Length: 434
Image (tube, rainbow, N blue to C red; front, side):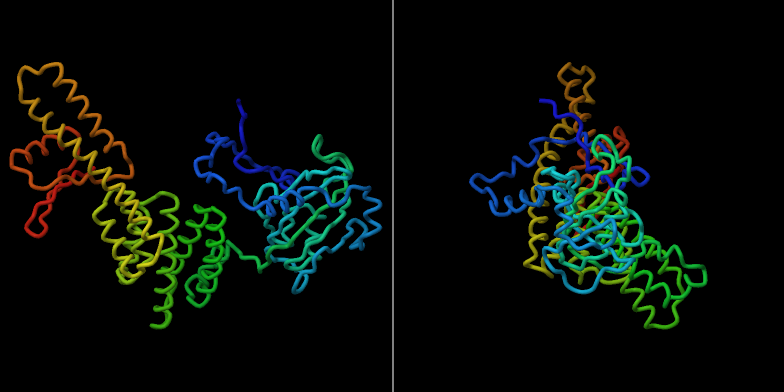
Protein backbone atom coordinates (compact mmCIF):
# COMPACT_ATOMS: atom_id res chain seq x y z
CA UNK A 1 0.00 0.00 0.00
CA UNK A 2 1.35 3.45 -0.90
CA UNK A 3 1.92 5.47 2.30
CA UNK A 4 2.57 8.72 0.39
CA UNK A 5 5.32 11.19 1.22
CA UNK A 6 6.50 11.46 4.81
CA UNK A 7 7.98 14.55 6.47
CA UNK A 8 11.45 14.18 7.97
CA UNK A 9 10.26 16.29 10.94
CA UNK A 10 6.81 17.47 12.02
CA UNK A 11 5.73 21.01 11.15
CA UNK A 12 5.95 23.34 14.15
CA UNK A 13 2.73 25.30 14.30
CA UNK A 14 4.24 28.23 16.24
CA UNK A 15 6.89 28.71 13.55
CA UNK A 16 4.24 28.44 10.87
CA UNK A 17 2.28 31.27 12.46
CA UNK A 18 5.35 33.47 12.99
CA UNK A 19 6.84 34.04 9.57
CA UNK A 20 6.60 30.54 8.11
CA UNK A 21 8.59 27.32 8.39
CA UNK A 22 10.56 24.90 6.24
CA UNK A 23 9.97 21.17 5.82
CA UNK A 24 11.68 18.26 4.08
CA UNK A 25 10.20 15.08 2.65
CA UNK A 26 11.88 11.83 3.71
CA UNK A 27 12.16 9.90 0.44
CA UNK A 28 13.91 7.03 2.23
CA UNK A 29 11.08 6.50 4.70
CA UNK A 30 10.45 2.82 5.40
CA UNK A 31 7.17 1.92 7.04
CA UNK A 32 8.73 -1.24 8.44
CA UNK A 33 12.03 0.24 9.54
CA UNK A 34 13.07 -1.36 12.84
CA UNK A 35 11.29 -4.69 12.27
CA UNK A 36 14.65 -6.44 12.00
CA UNK A 37 15.48 -5.38 15.56
CA UNK A 38 12.24 -6.63 17.09
CA UNK A 39 12.83 -9.19 19.81
CA UNK A 40 10.10 -11.75 20.13
CA UNK A 41 8.18 -11.61 23.43
CA UNK A 42 9.86 -8.32 24.41
CA UNK A 43 6.94 -5.94 24.37
CA UNK A 44 8.39 -3.14 26.50
CA UNK A 45 6.62 -1.60 29.46
CA UNK A 46 2.84 -1.57 29.36
CA UNK A 47 2.84 1.08 32.09
CA UNK A 48 5.01 3.41 29.99
CA UNK A 49 2.75 2.97 26.98
CA UNK A 50 -0.33 3.68 29.10
CA UNK A 51 1.23 6.82 30.64
CA UNK A 52 2.10 8.19 27.22
CA UNK A 53 -1.39 7.39 25.94
CA UNK A 54 -2.93 9.29 28.87
CA UNK A 55 -0.74 12.33 28.14
CA UNK A 56 -2.16 12.43 24.63
CA UNK A 57 -5.73 12.72 25.91
CA UNK A 58 -7.16 15.99 27.14
CA UNK A 59 -7.39 16.25 30.95
CA UNK A 60 -10.64 18.24 30.64
CA UNK A 61 -13.70 17.13 28.69
CA UNK A 62 -16.11 19.90 29.77
CA UNK A 63 -16.28 23.52 28.63
CA UNK A 64 -13.37 25.93 28.98
CA UNK A 65 -15.65 28.30 30.94
CA UNK A 66 -16.01 25.61 33.61
CA UNK A 67 -12.25 25.01 33.60
CA UNK A 68 -11.49 28.70 34.23
CA UNK A 69 -13.43 28.46 37.47
CA UNK A 70 -10.88 25.94 38.77
CA UNK A 71 -7.79 27.92 37.71
CA UNK A 72 -5.87 30.96 38.92
CA UNK A 73 -5.65 33.95 36.55
CA UNK A 74 -2.14 34.95 35.44
CA UNK A 75 -3.53 37.86 33.46
CA UNK A 76 -6.67 38.54 31.45
CA UNK A 77 -5.63 36.07 28.73
CA UNK A 78 -4.00 33.21 30.68
CA UNK A 79 -5.33 30.98 33.50
CA UNK A 80 -3.18 28.41 35.30
CA UNK A 81 -3.52 25.26 37.43
CA UNK A 82 -0.39 23.57 38.86
CA UNK A 83 -0.51 19.76 38.91
CA UNK A 84 3.04 19.23 40.15
CA UNK A 85 5.15 21.82 41.97
CA UNK A 86 8.55 22.72 40.58
CA UNK A 87 11.84 23.71 42.21
CA UNK A 88 13.93 26.88 42.16
CA UNK A 89 12.88 30.30 40.96
CA UNK A 90 10.67 31.51 38.13
CA UNK A 91 12.32 31.48 34.72
CA UNK A 92 13.75 34.85 33.58
CA UNK A 93 14.41 36.11 30.06
CA UNK A 94 17.51 34.83 28.26
CA UNK A 95 16.96 31.35 29.68
CA UNK A 96 17.04 28.29 27.45
CA UNK A 97 14.15 26.08 28.47
CA UNK A 98 13.31 22.53 27.46
CA UNK A 99 9.65 21.56 27.81
CA UNK A 100 7.25 18.79 26.94
CA UNK A 101 3.76 19.95 26.03
CA UNK A 102 0.40 18.92 24.62
CA UNK A 103 -2.17 21.44 23.33
CA UNK A 104 -5.92 20.81 23.04
CA UNK A 105 -8.89 22.68 21.68
CA UNK A 106 -12.19 22.81 23.60
CA UNK A 107 -13.99 19.43 23.81
CA UNK A 108 -11.41 17.72 21.58
CA UNK A 109 -9.83 14.59 23.05
CA UNK A 110 -6.63 14.53 21.01
CA UNK A 111 -3.97 17.27 20.86
CA UNK A 112 -3.61 19.51 17.82
CA UNK A 113 0.06 20.09 18.72
CA UNK A 114 2.24 17.82 20.83
CA UNK A 115 5.95 17.45 21.57
CA UNK A 116 5.07 14.15 23.29
CA UNK A 117 3.63 12.82 20.03
CA UNK A 118 6.79 13.91 18.19
CA UNK A 119 8.81 12.19 20.92
CA UNK A 120 11.08 15.22 20.97
CA UNK A 121 11.16 17.85 23.75
CA UNK A 122 10.74 21.45 22.61
CA UNK A 123 13.41 24.10 23.23
CA UNK A 124 13.06 27.85 23.33
CA UNK A 125 14.89 30.89 24.68
CA UNK A 126 12.69 33.07 26.83
CA UNK A 127 12.59 36.66 25.65
CA UNK A 128 13.57 35.77 22.10
CA UNK A 129 9.90 36.01 20.97
CA UNK A 130 10.31 32.93 18.76
CA UNK A 131 7.07 31.22 19.81
CA UNK A 132 3.43 32.10 20.40
CA UNK A 133 3.15 34.92 22.95
CA UNK A 134 0.70 33.09 25.21
CA UNK A 135 2.83 29.93 25.19
CA UNK A 136 5.97 31.84 26.23
CA UNK A 137 4.15 33.89 28.89
CA UNK A 138 2.80 30.69 30.41
CA UNK A 139 6.26 29.10 30.62
CA UNK A 140 7.67 32.22 32.29
CA UNK A 141 5.42 31.52 35.30
CA UNK A 142 6.85 28.02 35.76
CA UNK A 143 9.85 26.44 37.49
CA UNK A 144 12.04 23.45 36.69
CA UNK A 145 10.21 20.09 37.02
CA UNK A 146 6.85 21.86 37.33
CA UNK A 147 3.82 20.49 35.53
CA UNK A 148 0.86 22.76 34.91
CA UNK A 149 -2.24 23.33 32.80
CA UNK A 150 -2.88 26.66 31.09
CA UNK A 151 -6.04 27.93 29.48
CA UNK A 152 -4.81 30.50 26.96
CA UNK A 153 -6.94 32.98 25.00
CA UNK A 154 -6.87 33.05 21.21
CA UNK A 155 -5.75 36.69 21.48
CA UNK A 156 -2.23 35.58 22.51
CA UNK A 157 -2.24 32.43 20.38
CA UNK A 158 -3.44 32.26 16.76
CA UNK A 159 -5.60 35.40 16.75
CA UNK A 160 -9.07 35.99 15.39
CA UNK A 161 -8.41 34.35 12.01
CA UNK A 162 -6.63 31.22 13.24
CA UNK A 163 -5.09 28.97 10.61
CA UNK A 164 -7.90 27.05 8.89
CA UNK A 165 -8.68 24.27 8.63
CA UNK A 166 -6.51 23.04 11.50
CA UNK A 167 -6.74 26.13 13.72
CA UNK A 168 -10.26 27.54 13.93
CA UNK A 169 -10.91 31.30 14.25
CA UNK A 170 -10.82 32.66 17.80
CA UNK A 171 -9.64 29.32 19.15
CA UNK A 172 -8.72 29.26 22.85
CA UNK A 173 -6.52 26.33 23.82
CA UNK A 174 -5.57 24.22 26.82
CA UNK A 175 -1.79 23.69 27.11
CA UNK A 176 -0.43 20.97 29.40
CA UNK A 177 3.25 21.82 29.97
CA UNK A 178 6.13 20.18 31.85
CA UNK A 179 9.46 22.00 32.31
CA UNK A 180 12.26 19.49 31.85
CA UNK A 181 15.29 21.74 32.26
CA UNK A 182 16.44 25.35 32.19
CA UNK A 183 19.86 26.97 31.83
CA UNK A 184 21.29 30.36 30.84
CA UNK A 185 21.03 30.80 27.07
CA UNK A 186 24.31 30.43 25.19
CA UNK A 187 25.24 32.95 22.52
CA UNK A 188 26.34 30.99 19.46
CA UNK A 189 27.68 34.21 17.92
CA UNK A 190 29.81 35.22 20.91
CA UNK A 191 33.09 35.07 18.96
CA UNK A 192 31.71 36.78 15.88
CA UNK A 193 30.73 39.79 17.99
CA UNK A 194 34.32 40.44 19.16
CA UNK A 195 36.18 43.33 17.56
CA UNK A 196 39.79 43.03 16.37
CA UNK A 197 41.26 44.31 19.64
CA UNK A 198 39.21 41.84 21.69
CA UNK A 199 40.20 38.99 19.39
CA UNK A 200 43.87 39.54 20.22
CA UNK A 201 43.25 39.28 23.96
CA UNK A 202 43.47 35.68 25.17
CA UNK A 203 41.68 36.55 28.43
CA UNK A 204 38.68 37.80 26.45
CA UNK A 205 38.76 35.05 23.83
CA UNK A 206 38.94 32.13 26.26
CA UNK A 207 35.65 33.11 27.92
CA UNK A 208 33.86 33.31 24.57
CA UNK A 209 35.44 30.06 23.40
CA UNK A 210 34.02 28.35 26.49
CA UNK A 211 30.56 29.56 25.43
CA UNK A 212 31.04 28.39 21.85
CA UNK A 213 32.24 24.96 23.01
CA UNK A 214 29.07 24.54 25.06
CA UNK A 215 26.96 25.76 22.15
CA UNK A 216 28.66 23.34 19.73
CA UNK A 217 28.28 20.48 22.19
CA UNK A 218 24.58 21.24 22.42
CA UNK A 219 24.32 21.28 18.61
CA UNK A 220 26.01 17.87 18.44
CA UNK A 221 23.56 16.41 20.95
CA UNK A 222 20.70 17.67 18.78
CA UNK A 223 22.24 16.06 15.66
CA UNK A 224 23.18 19.46 14.21
CA UNK A 225 26.65 18.09 13.55
CA UNK A 226 27.58 20.40 10.67
CA UNK A 227 26.71 23.43 12.78
CA UNK A 228 28.80 22.02 15.63
CA UNK A 229 31.76 21.60 13.27
CA UNK A 230 31.47 25.22 12.10
CA UNK A 231 31.50 26.50 15.67
CA UNK A 232 34.41 24.30 16.76
CA UNK A 233 36.43 25.49 13.75
CA UNK A 234 35.56 29.10 14.57
CA UNK A 235 36.88 28.57 18.10
CA UNK A 236 40.10 26.96 16.79
CA UNK A 237 40.80 29.80 14.35
CA UNK A 238 40.17 32.47 16.99
CA UNK A 239 42.42 30.78 19.54
CA UNK A 240 45.26 30.51 17.04
CA UNK A 241 45.09 34.25 16.31
CA UNK A 242 45.04 35.65 19.83
CA UNK A 243 48.22 36.86 21.55
CA UNK A 244 49.59 34.97 24.55
CA UNK A 245 51.26 36.78 27.44
CA UNK A 246 53.03 33.92 29.22
CA UNK A 247 53.50 30.15 29.51
CA UNK A 248 50.36 29.79 31.60
CA UNK A 249 48.19 31.17 28.80
CA UNK A 250 50.06 29.03 26.28
CA UNK A 251 49.36 25.87 28.32
CA UNK A 252 45.69 26.82 28.67
CA UNK A 253 45.41 27.51 24.93
CA UNK A 254 47.03 24.19 24.06
CA UNK A 255 44.74 22.26 26.40
CA UNK A 256 41.68 23.93 24.87
CA UNK A 257 42.90 23.29 21.31
CA UNK A 258 43.36 19.60 22.13
CA UNK A 259 39.75 19.43 23.34
CA UNK A 260 38.49 21.29 20.25
CA UNK A 261 40.39 19.17 17.73
CA UNK A 262 39.27 16.00 19.52
CA UNK A 263 35.64 17.14 19.31
CA UNK A 264 36.11 17.90 15.61
CA UNK A 265 37.46 14.39 15.07
CA UNK A 266 34.32 12.96 16.66
CA UNK A 267 32.08 15.23 14.57
CA UNK A 268 33.77 14.38 11.28
CA UNK A 269 33.51 10.66 12.00
CA UNK A 270 29.85 11.19 12.84
CA UNK A 271 29.39 12.91 9.46
CA UNK A 272 31.23 10.06 7.71
CA UNK A 273 34.10 12.34 6.66
CA UNK A 274 37.08 10.14 7.63
CA UNK A 275 39.72 12.11 5.73
CA UNK A 276 38.78 15.27 7.61
CA UNK A 277 38.86 13.30 10.87
CA UNK A 278 42.40 12.19 10.04
CA UNK A 279 43.37 15.84 9.40
CA UNK A 280 42.23 16.70 12.91
CA UNK A 281 44.26 13.81 14.34
CA UNK A 282 47.35 15.08 12.50
CA UNK A 283 46.77 18.51 14.09
CA UNK A 284 46.55 16.82 17.48
CA UNK A 285 49.92 15.15 16.91
CA UNK A 286 51.49 18.61 16.91
CA UNK A 287 49.89 19.39 20.27
CA UNK A 288 50.22 16.19 22.31
CA UNK A 289 51.28 12.56 22.37
CA UNK A 290 48.15 10.92 20.97
CA UNK A 291 49.45 7.47 21.97
CA UNK A 292 48.55 8.39 25.55
CA UNK A 293 44.99 9.40 24.67
CA UNK A 294 42.54 6.53 24.14
CA UNK A 295 39.78 8.75 22.75
CA UNK A 296 41.98 10.19 19.99
CA UNK A 297 43.38 6.77 19.06
CA UNK A 298 39.87 5.36 18.94
CA UNK A 299 38.62 8.10 16.63
CA UNK A 300 41.70 7.73 14.42
CA UNK A 301 41.10 3.99 14.20
CA UNK A 302 37.50 4.54 13.13
CA UNK A 303 38.53 7.05 10.45
CA UNK A 304 41.31 4.85 9.06
CA UNK A 305 38.94 1.88 8.89
CA UNK A 306 36.48 3.91 6.79
CA UNK A 307 39.29 4.98 4.47
CA UNK A 308 40.37 1.36 4.04
CA UNK A 309 43.73 1.54 5.81
CA UNK A 310 43.05 -1.50 7.95
CA UNK A 311 46.59 -2.08 9.22
CA UNK A 312 46.97 1.41 10.69
CA UNK A 313 43.39 1.30 11.92
CA UNK A 314 44.11 -1.89 13.88
CA UNK A 315 47.26 -0.35 15.35
CA UNK A 316 45.34 2.71 16.58
CA UNK A 317 42.43 0.70 17.98
CA UNK A 318 44.73 -1.74 19.78
CA UNK A 319 46.57 1.25 21.25
CA UNK A 320 43.25 2.63 22.48
CA UNK A 321 42.27 -0.76 23.87
CA UNK A 322 45.55 -0.97 25.78
CA UNK A 323 44.73 2.32 27.51
CA UNK A 324 41.03 1.48 28.02
CA UNK A 325 40.76 -2.35 28.01
CA UNK A 326 37.11 -2.38 29.15
CA UNK A 327 35.75 0.17 26.73
CA UNK A 328 32.87 -1.46 24.83
CA UNK A 329 33.02 0.98 21.90
CA UNK A 330 36.65 0.09 21.21
CA UNK A 331 35.92 -3.64 21.42
CA UNK A 332 32.92 -3.31 19.11
CA UNK A 333 34.90 -1.30 16.54
CA UNK A 334 37.73 -3.87 16.59
CA UNK A 335 35.20 -6.58 15.76
CA UNK A 336 33.83 -4.42 12.95
CA UNK A 337 37.37 -3.91 11.67
CA UNK A 338 37.99 -7.67 11.60
CA UNK A 339 34.84 -8.17 9.53
CA UNK A 340 35.76 -5.39 7.09
CA UNK A 341 39.36 -6.58 6.81
CA UNK A 342 38.36 -10.20 6.17
CA UNK A 343 35.84 -9.15 3.54
CA UNK A 344 38.46 -6.92 1.93
CA UNK A 345 41.02 -9.75 1.83
CA UNK A 346 38.51 -12.07 0.16
CA UNK A 347 37.68 -9.48 -2.49
CA UNK A 348 41.38 -8.67 -2.89
CA UNK A 349 42.24 -12.31 -3.48
CA UNK A 350 39.53 -12.60 -6.12
CA UNK A 351 40.76 -9.48 -7.90
CA UNK A 352 44.43 -10.44 -8.04
CA UNK A 353 43.81 -14.08 -8.88
CA UNK A 354 41.91 -12.88 -11.93
CA UNK A 355 44.21 -9.93 -12.54
CA UNK A 356 47.24 -12.07 -13.23
CA UNK A 357 45.14 -14.09 -15.62
CA UNK A 358 44.24 -10.83 -17.37
CA UNK A 359 47.89 -9.83 -17.78
CA UNK A 360 48.80 -13.20 -19.25
CA UNK A 361 45.79 -13.06 -21.54
CA UNK A 362 47.00 -9.72 -22.89
CA UNK A 363 50.21 -11.33 -24.14
CA UNK A 364 48.39 -13.83 -26.26
CA UNK A 365 48.07 -12.67 -29.84
CA UNK A 366 44.95 -14.64 -30.57
CA UNK A 367 42.59 -13.75 -27.71
CA UNK A 368 39.54 -15.90 -27.37
CA UNK A 369 36.07 -14.68 -26.48
CA UNK A 370 36.55 -16.04 -22.94
CA UNK A 371 39.71 -13.98 -22.49
CA UNK A 372 37.91 -10.82 -23.62
CA UNK A 373 35.12 -11.52 -21.15
CA UNK A 374 37.68 -12.08 -18.39
CA UNK A 375 39.32 -8.74 -19.13
CA UNK A 376 35.96 -7.01 -18.77
CA UNK A 377 35.29 -8.78 -15.48
CA UNK A 378 38.65 -7.67 -14.07
CA UNK A 379 38.02 -4.11 -15.12
CA UNK A 380 34.70 -4.20 -13.26
CA UNK A 381 36.45 -5.56 -10.14
CA UNK A 382 39.04 -2.81 -10.24
CA UNK A 383 36.30 -0.24 -10.79
CA UNK A 384 34.82 -1.14 -7.40
CA UNK A 385 38.01 0.16 -5.79
CA UNK A 386 38.13 3.20 -8.05
CA UNK A 387 34.52 4.14 -7.33
CA UNK A 388 34.90 3.88 -3.56
CA UNK A 389 35.46 7.53 -2.52
CA UNK A 390 36.33 6.53 1.04
CA UNK A 391 39.09 4.15 -0.04
CA UNK A 392 42.28 5.83 -1.27
CA UNK A 393 44.67 2.87 -0.90
CA UNK A 394 44.43 -0.81 -1.78
CA UNK A 395 46.86 -3.07 0.08
CA UNK A 396 48.23 -5.98 -1.95
CA UNK A 397 49.63 -9.36 -0.95
CA UNK A 398 53.40 -9.66 -0.33
CA UNK A 399 56.02 -11.97 -1.90
CA UNK A 400 55.61 -10.92 -5.54
CA UNK A 401 58.10 -12.13 -8.13
CA UNK A 402 59.70 -9.70 -10.60
CA UNK A 403 57.34 -10.94 -13.27
CA UNK A 404 54.34 -10.35 -11.01
CA UNK A 405 55.57 -6.86 -10.10
CA UNK A 406 55.76 -6.13 -13.81
CA UNK A 407 52.11 -7.18 -14.12
CA UNK A 408 51.19 -4.88 -11.24
CA UNK A 409 52.86 -1.98 -13.03
CA UNK A 410 50.87 -2.76 -16.18
CA UNK A 411 47.63 -2.75 -14.20
CA UNK A 412 48.60 0.52 -12.51
CA UNK A 413 49.11 2.14 -15.90
CA UNK A 414 45.85 0.78 -17.25
CA UNK A 415 43.80 2.07 -14.32
CA UNK A 416 45.82 5.29 -13.78
CA UNK A 417 46.91 4.22 -10.31
CA UNK A 418 50.20 4.63 -8.46
CA UNK A 419 52.02 1.47 -7.35
CA UNK A 420 53.63 2.19 -3.98
CA UNK A 421 56.43 -0.15 -2.82
CA UNK A 422 57.71 0.28 0.74
CA UNK A 423 60.47 -1.54 2.61
CA UNK A 424 59.62 -2.51 6.18
CA UNK A 425 61.76 -4.93 8.18
CA UNK A 426 63.55 -5.97 5.00
CA UNK A 427 60.25 -6.89 3.43
CA UNK A 428 58.51 -5.25 0.49
CA UNK A 429 54.92 -4.09 0.89
CA UNK A 430 52.78 -3.18 -2.11
CA UNK A 431 49.86 -0.76 -2.34
CA UNK A 432 47.85 0.84 -5.08
CA UNK A 433 47.08 4.52 -4.50
CA UNK A 434 44.59 6.71 -6.33
